[in-house]
Figure 1 (cartoon, rainbow, N blue to C red):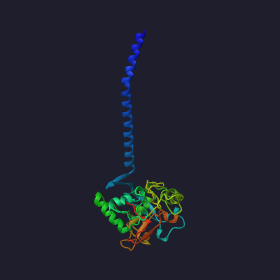
Figure 2: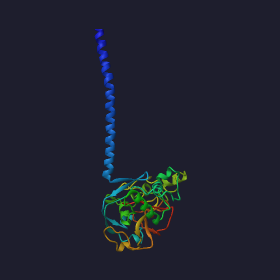
Figure 3: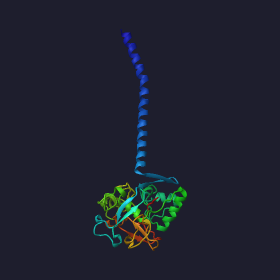
Figure 4: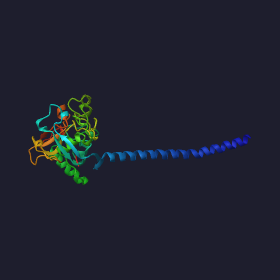
Length: 296
């Protein structure tokens, strides 16, 4: 009887020894399949949200699809009482679909395309990966875009002023915020009085402006359209352009002496970081407060 029990025990042990590796392999296959499914879901999610990633000279950057639509451009009610005359009248504008940078162009991307970093405010080599390029003129941006297009075969450009404001307001997902992504400026903008930025500056963790994507995005998943660095737009500036602007895909005056810049900077007041605020400078001006964001 004891012999029979021992035999049965040995058989059971052998079964366990054989089954264990099979079970472990099944578990590994299950985990691998879960990882694959998660990756596929992430990829599908990005595709569904309209994100597209491009790579140039080993540096990748992401663009967000902005579905076309109609919005009210200019001095809408939530912009408050400090609107400029150049923001009036508020008017309806239709914009076609386009892509816009999830982030401002970084020092890393600029260096990959141009072979140099013109920024006045540079961190260490690693930190430069995530800081916006600045000290670039509108003319410099055109040369950067020309070289980027030659390297990628695409047709990147600066956004029009209307595209910029439409995207900053959240496109067809807009919730009518004063700033890009919130009515609470500290949540979304690296500007002169942001406590998070000031604390980092005091600790010498930042060279004045913030990392791209350091704060919350807007409704479309776009970062830093309020604050950080001013962003050049493609348009010539027109003080009273809103009085006679086309209602569909306006591109600014046909001529002018200055180019539009939008969004405010790390040295700006909250008023300048509003989504409707319009400012301009000469196309050859370089400043540590001015950078760019790509469109396509």
